[in-house]
Image (cartoon, rainbow, N blue to C red):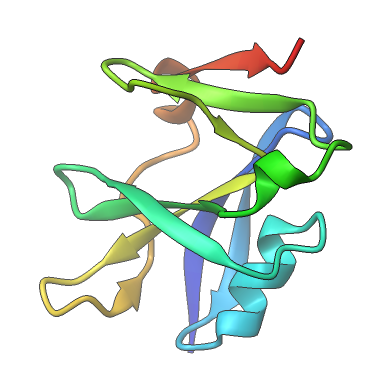
Length: 111
């Protein structure tokens, strides 16, 4: 079974839909990209969606851009995924739409 996620691709400055195999952590690592070895889920939204990011992105000097949401203390660098979650913590298709994403963040640079 596949689920729909939204990728915020800061390498290419694009936002697009990706499909992941439910329960396959390797798909999350590959979708984040940039050699992601450890991901984190620092943000959960009211609709149950969650933001997945590379937890080691700040150590990668090739990653130059991040996103900062309203009310966040600090930005999150590197590519991110928005994936839906159930009340029990299982992954499901994102409820957030592609049209919603540009209003959720501002892009920031390391420099």
